[in-house]
Image 1: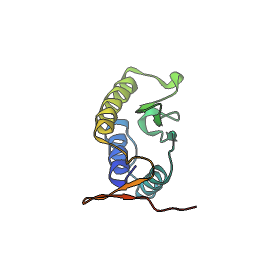
Image 2: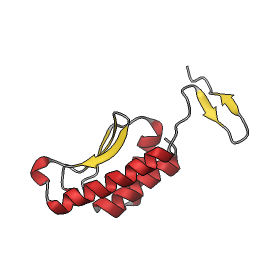
Image 3: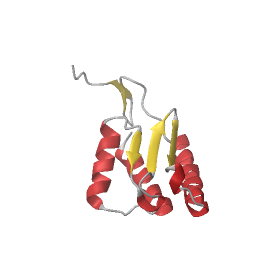
Image 4: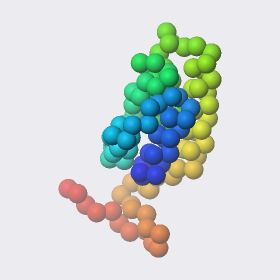
Length: 112
């Protein structure tokens, strides 16, 4: 995932789920999402302690603990997940072992 996409995800969590837009936490989220596949990220926000962003099973979505469910939170989750799904449709990662260049496809650097 690139930084632009990770920041767009963060912006959705702020706008739809009441996540506090703290620069240090944003940087931590962006760094982790761009350097590894983090399947589950607890952000809490207005969804309570169990407010999480999920990047798993080919989907991007949010949810919270069942005991924290309310009609208002369910609406937040639905709206955020719809926006994340739309963003994911636009996101196309580079094939494994390939870096994308604006001009051409070049082999990825070997790190081993």
